[in-house]
Length: 239
Image (cartoon, rainbow, N blue to C red; front, side, top):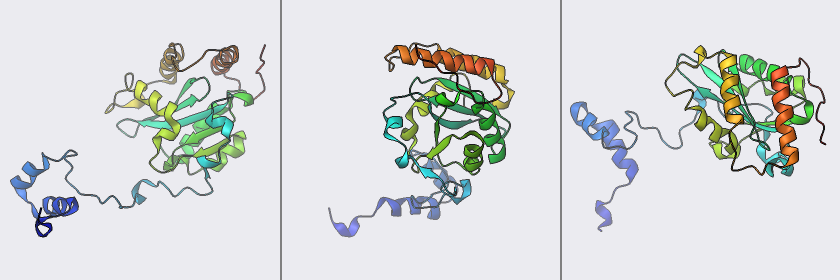
């Protein structure tokens, strides 16, 4: 209880990572939850991955209330799931229906990702693709080109807040059953991605109250993806 003999957890970590050497250091590291060999301060910058440096981004806090409430279809959440050998798949989830679309992308640079997202967006009627919510990954640096080409608004999550696109995060977890971590995702064709997405879309959804309008939205989304029109048109009709 003597304060003179108390040290902070940060001091302990520094002793482990800076002063410990050789076999002793390896033995001590095994008792750490992360077992990492390098200590990174919680205040360390993330300049290496390019997050937080996207120009002219619109915060999720400016997203309309109707999007937050999932009241109408047409608002999507997106992300990349990452594999080995610089491979990735773009995942898109519609907030109202939880409809899933998977997009094959050849690499993570912003030009490639934005081109793939533009191509996919043009397959859907404008009523069913009004906005996209993404995190602050550097693959979205060219987000203004996406909006200019599609007239779809992009909203960016707060830093380190994956729950702000919770439907997408949950879906990404499910997708790891098909695309395990530590595997090369580039081996999967777009046809394979479409088949996996269809399996997810045909599952029963406990979170959905499958009302008529949601059923119509699901059917139009499926038809739009399968027919793959080359331009964004209006084809939604509620009966």
